[in-house]
Image 1 (cartoon, rainbow, N blue to C red):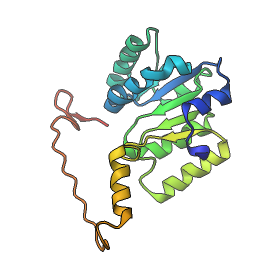
Image 2 (tube, helix red, strand yellow):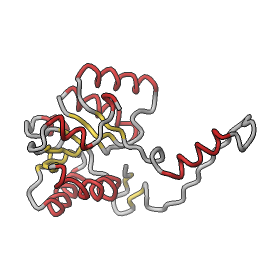
Image 3 (cartoon, rainbow, N blue to C red):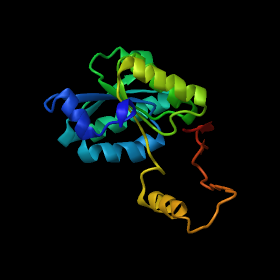
Image 4 (cartoon, rainbow, N blue to C red):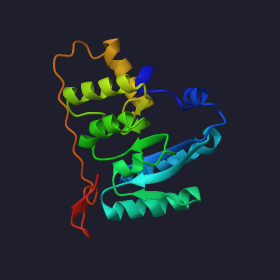
Length: 197
């Protein structure tokens, strides 16, 4: 998969199966709490991964993250007021980036320049300029970056792609896509009057 993605098994072979990979979290989001952590906990012991720190500039999220992760992992979690503080923790080997979509590219560049491998939530970038900047930073650093693949790895999406490519629809001359989302509370937090990534 090149420098922009590697399986956990391949990663383990690179660093050595006896070396614990200590992970920091950049941005404690709902997706991190509800999706990343359950997935992480399914294989972290076998793969010898641990989360040791969380960075979030919003105090509410930072404290929620610290408490939530401490409960899940059974040890204290260092809470960092910003990413500079996180990257000053020498023990942090890699980070999970789960900030707002428009921040993913910058945070990935920041992480690899700080010498950390990343799992970056999708989408990697919102512009081609940002995508190229990430690619350059990753290549220059030699770090490993894996991008979240929601809607890319599901069997239903592969089946749809195969059906389209088979020609069973006939010539496709136009595609129109609409996505309507009605999820009250997803973006607004009435108790705080704020938005959430």
